[in-house]
Length: 123
Image (cartoon, rainbow, N blue to C red; front, side, top):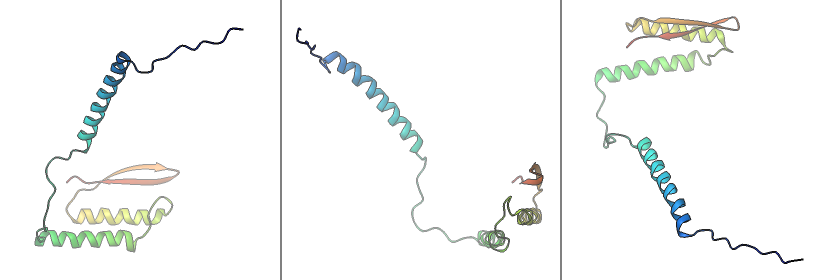
């Protein structure tokens, strides 16, 4: 029986190194360019103390807080499992938006015998 001969394998000779490095470098630069494009935010972040709210902004903040506390606190959980409260929240939002002068459009759909509404206003 003859002894086995193993061929010598050169893993990285000059030509295979060039064939390997250039595509990897191109892939790296394309990836880096994509990453930089996604994470680049135009403009500069605000630094320093914020100016005080105007009377209008302070009133708006108070009204928004009141509405959020009503929806989250007083009315509580509202979803398809607690359908009655979901309808209460819908009525509250519709009346609040109407009182603010917006025209509220309803887009209704039905799931498992229950009617759900998306409310839409144009600002």
